Length: 217
Image (tube, rainbow, N blue to C red; front, side):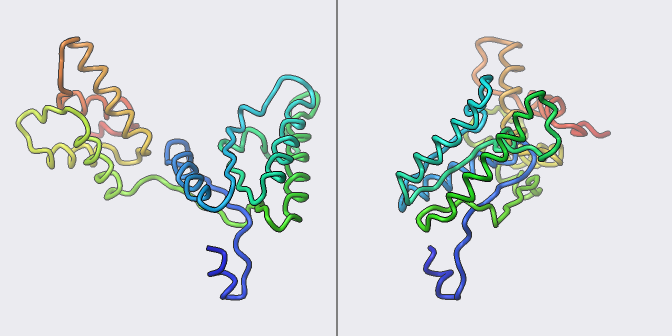
């Protein structure tokens, strides 16, 4: 709510950059923010890899067209997923045509022009850094995954299974926790195509395969 900032004599943030390693939930958070933004403005969600073309100048043209669309739809929020594919570090472009340096220049130029329109917000003046989930966050995520999956706990309680997986998954991302259950399902199906539940042993084995250092002795 921008009025809350203005009551404090401040301008609201013009843009947010979400950073963090792969699998920590950046794209999910982006989707949540987009759903919230749609209540008050036009929301354009863009997967940046879709803008990259092999045609020289094609990516810059696609960027310019995107910002033109956003200006026409103001007030508008642009959501860029995987923006690193468009904006690597300037000066480290190894392509012959300096493609990515040109794309980055185009992006910055469009953002500068965009920010002069009071109805549009694009500057990345706030950074949200997403890190690896804490032990309590892993436990909560694993509890939800176990509850939503047909799991045979092999004569141990659900709480004991979740506790064991929580201990073994230290350093895992949320994406890796989901991958553990996917891998455990595959392991179970390899044993029997008629299986109806994932065994706890399969989950523990999958945890060792998916998460580095999960099998510490």
